[in-house]
Length: 121
Image (cartoon, rainbow, N blue to C red; front, side, top):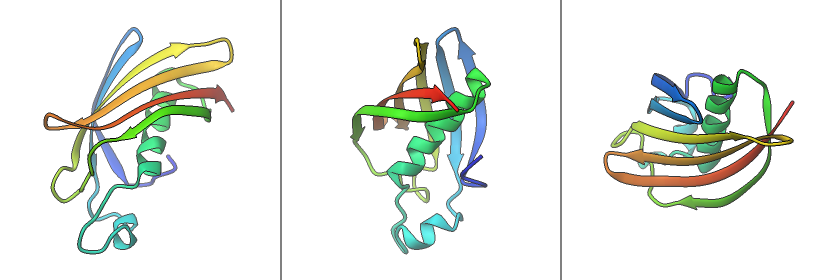
């Protein structure tokens, strides 16, 4: 896990190509001391890393992001106000690896939409 103690997986359900993960962001993590003091914001690159790590766990392979598209950060994820997130991953095997379509939400708010292609490391 690249993001040690950054988040906790509360529940992970996989049904064929669809996975749903309920996670909690650690509001005490050192990242938030610099991003941003007094008004913490979860960095987008950290959210992308979480998606990669969840996908690796689901497919049981080490992966590397090859490309990403349709990256839409739609709401700020403040770990003090909305630490609990639901990540929905549509994982499809391709000729070269995996294509993952993700939607990340908190409460009823869509925070992130992302499509990534991963190859095996």
